[in-house]
Amino acid sequence: MVGIVGYGAYVPSYRIKVEEIAKVWGDDPVALSNGLVVNEKSVPSADEDTATIAVTAARYALARAQIDPKKIGAVYVGSESHPYAVKPTATIVAEAVCATPDLTAADLEFACKAGTAGIQMSMGLVESDMIEYGLAIGADTSQGAPGDALEYTASAGGAAYIIGKKDVLAEITTTCSFTTDTPDFYRREGEDYPSHGGRFTGEPAYFKHVLSAAKNLFEKTDSQASDYDYACFHQPNGKFYLRAAKKLGFTPEQYSRGLLTPNIGNTYSGAVPLGLSNILDVAEPGDKIFVVSYGSGAGSDGFTLEVTDEILKKRDLAPKTEEIISNKTYVDYAVYAKFKGKIKM
Image 1 (tube, one colour):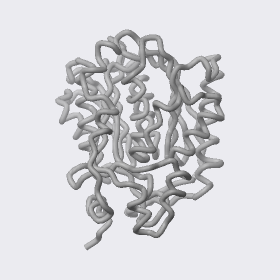
Image 2 (tube, one colour):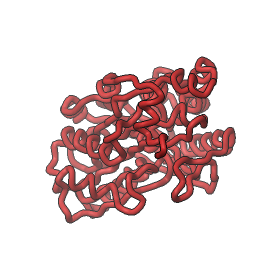
Image 3 (cartoon, rainbow, N blue to C red):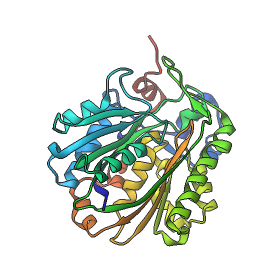
């Protein structure tokens, strides 16, 4: 049995409402909220970045896992906003959690699915007995150019997962992926903000990959939507998430728990990891979970999980996702622009 031994989430406490951003650019806040299904988003403070988010989430994951950090044999941090262009975030995390130097570590980048790619890599190393535990993190302080549609959703946050074979709280029963060269979103080296293909990001990008990975997962497991208690998908906005869930046959009772974007925005590499952590905070032993991530460029990773009795022993050992999200302070556009470095000297 290979699966999740511990998990942890973190979202910065600062928030900015969609209407505050719309006020600056003269947009209709009601139309934006309804169209994107986003009401507000998280904002990293001046001293928060992908590394600090990843470290906090990793420490919470360790608190739940109750393992010696020196038994971690791999650390992967997936993000598209690593604080250094040349200097790994993964080594910062490994040092901060007191992991052994006898490990492999790497930063991963595949738009918003780099965190789930790290989970798959950790699974392979654990299953082959090359390592005892792997730490996979998806975290971002995502970028959106002033006045661009992305500015209403691009936010900050992340979650960490310790993968192992002992005392597993959720077994990862199956994983598969679907990947093509679809350039719907990109940012060249040295550029501050990404470019995107507008409606092209929906079709043939997001929906083709999420739905294809999901259908592959159904076929591989000989299952259907009704066989699962919970479902979670990548959420660049609430609209895409809801459309994908409904197309695949999931009900609001199944998919609502994993949808966090309306209240924290799109955390990019942290989106699916955070949605899953919110599900694990309430899931019961025997519950089955269906998860599909998405990363522009483009690809999706799919997972099926089954919760075990260990969840009852571990989930109260660290702050829960909703508890973290509920701790918030609102800022205006000026403070937001300052924290996000949008004001150039």
